[in-house]
Length: 158
Image 1: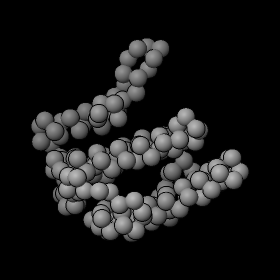
Image 2: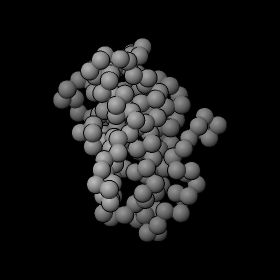
Image 3: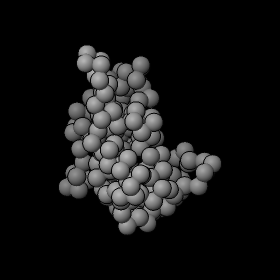
Image 4: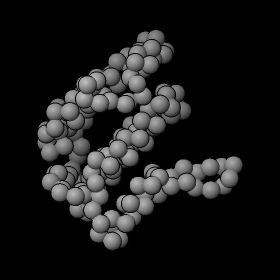
């Protein structure tokens, strides 16, 4: 599954291109070399951002959600394997039901949301998706989306 997540198939050349972090992750798993959490998060962010930029169509309406869910699951899995440098994040226990609303989800993962910037970005994402959902339903378009800068956020924008 990691190979699928961090690779792109080029149909015309019939070859697979791997994201550079795919090999770093493999090294970490097999050679016990630690991963930099910020770098891995950046790699995942690029995948989530690409899914977001594809736009919303009926055919790919769940692509962004699946990408975000996969990202969270991979981060939990890497934490469980203790692959991160100076790791101190909480790990979900197997068979734990993931909370379905924002407040409960934040309460379920306090170590992840202890950083105000992460919490702000998460809340901004939730509220933005609600707005886009309303626009899709009422206007059949997403005029607000052009102001989101392709999900490239930094602290001054928050």
